[in-house]
Length: 287
Ligand code: HPA
Image (cartoon, rainbow, N blue to C red; front, side, top):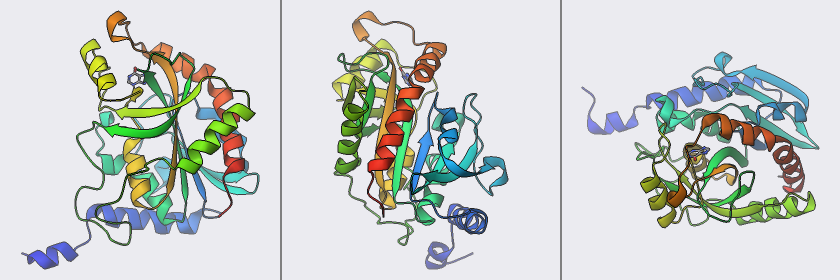
């Protein structure tokens, strides 16, 4: 049996898998990306927006999880937006699919180790702030992690980031400003910053849970993005989050939350969100 110290020295499975994946991608990708964009519900076609693209299916990347959800494609695309080197994650993994939060954030850990400095997360969310309407876009200012799990739990790998990372600004103020300025430049209305609450799902919220989430300070609720955001901050990346508010949930006049409605609103907003993303990427200072 290994001694305690030996056991601590032994690489975890996770670390081993991350390192194998990093060396595979280092030898396979045409370049290291600066910016990573993770596409959420309804944005699956954004991959077409980049030039000189190189695409690899998740299934061909060692240790990458596989999406089990319809509408999440499963390709890593690399290319240029202007002169910026961008990686697009076309499809994500969710805690409710049965993945741990470490597995959910696996692609972000790998891309951070390949040198990416900025992460842009997109998702569809339920609005809780009564000022929101279906089709509003919320720029994440902060988050509440109700997953009951943290992807940084377990041995800390000091070369990846600190044991107790600071989260006083989980979403970079400079990126929030860029996103809000881009929205006004692109004449996209109803773009407001707010707090995103991440619940495990897959059951949607009850009226009582909705009231409680609002009382906790959440402006919108969803089932994704926060494991990725936590790992990116730990890795020293700057993070921006954009939620398309697909439905607004009023605990006093609660309506069924239907997946078809969520997808329809997210798809209807795709063109605007794509326009916003293109403008945001242009404004991000080159590294
Ligand atoms: N709740 C949770 N996740 C969601 C919602 C919602 O109302 N809308 C879109 N994703």
